[in-house]
Length: 224
Image 1 (cartoon, rainbow, N blue to C red):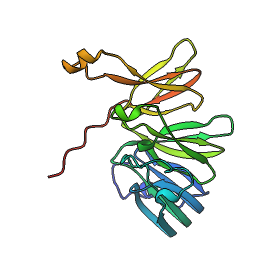
Image 2 (tube, one colour):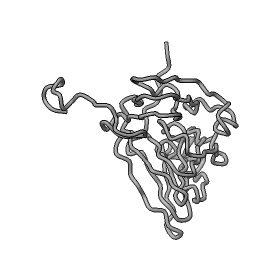
Image 3 (cartoon, one colour):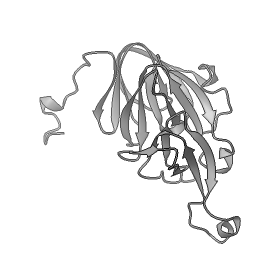
Image 4 (tube, one colour):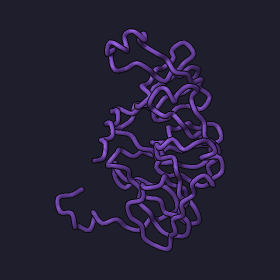
């Protein structure tokens, strides 16, 4: 952003082609011509002839399991125009998915994505006890999606001889071919004594990548 907010070079021009682009580190633009999907509550501005429809549990298999309260509800964006999406000033980034490279994403990190992508709800066994939810969406097919993290994400390689352990609150995405389980890094007795604060992690095994949030989200404040 240049010094004068209203300089012509700072004014956003209409998109040149349909699809997802990034206007700044904390917002993405979707030039819609037909249909797209977005997480409810993430649209911050739009122009053109667009409609936004709450989809709830009717969108394919995305919510075939119980809603976890972590923002997995979707809306359909239909028509022709442009919409901007963001989430609490989080860092946004784009990922291209193709037939050879799917991606499993923590539901709370999904921003919006192409309607051409296939998706299915998955979960890590026993994850309900971890406090992180870990109800995830596995994407396949070909298309682009926008995700969020607290900053520029870490991309870690996972190899057969070097599994990766990720804090359940910091797991953003990983290769769908990886085996997942929960790993307890301290004893029950240590946990009751206070422990390290890092009691349970998501263990990723096999060959692929893990995308990690560089900053854990702050606990939600109780409303008065």
